[in-house]
Length: 326
Image 1 (tube, rainbow, N blue to C red):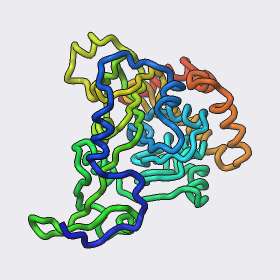
Image 2 (image 1 turned 60 degrees about the vertical axis):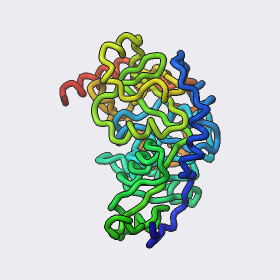
Image 3 (image 1 turned 30 degrees about the vertical axis):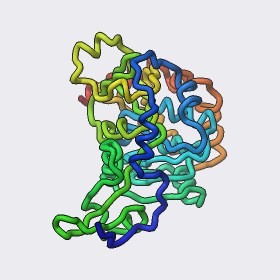
Image 4 (image 1 turned 90 degrees about the horizontal axis):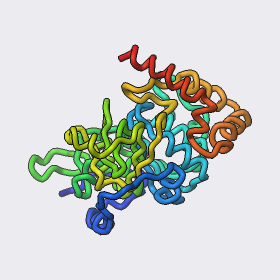
């Protein structure tokens, strides 16, 4: 296959499928109790310098409970996949947790505007960045899930995004046409928030999934955070609803409200007032530092953060909004 052009962006993860296979060959697939706290999951599976990715879409179904814990434990030097990321990206920028970034959708919180602190961090020069389209990152994960070293797309060709990526323009061996080859991406650890899971890690998610199917299968280690922990018999009653099977999962964290202040489809709406507060305080670095001390560093758990934001009463208010909207 002839390489016609190459992007100049950095490649943070090795796309060699045989090296990935060596890891997966030793990974346990036992059906055992994997329940633990968010604190323990981060301590065990997210060391400094690893490559981290989050599931969800925009502010929908984000594993914010894990993002908070990563910041609280002051993780540094992470790689991160900025694929359809909004508030989760904003939180990790608050802790300056990563210094290597595969960027597709970052800084913006959709209709809410741009995160002032995330923008400052991205303009600081402290972060190495490779640019990708959302679809290109999904194709990278799909290639990893399939166990091959690259995926093929027709997007990004002829763009500055291609130039700033680590993709390659190649000649199709069948048609001679130019395609975009994107390297497989196997994150060291992934966190995905779901609606239900059993103690083994069988997980059910509802609503839009984007690339979480591929992400869960590309992950070397997978942390599942769940709104509700259910008995395995519930999973067995409707096995086709299981999107992520137990043998992919390393940790199960029961976390009602774990997506807050994001939107958990069919359960609770996003807390637009609290998200607006984040955006407001970020304009002043000193005020933002006090905000982080109150809401992240000054609490021991995500549950304490939820209580500061209104607790069960606020989640019930957001549940009613979600039910009306749907």
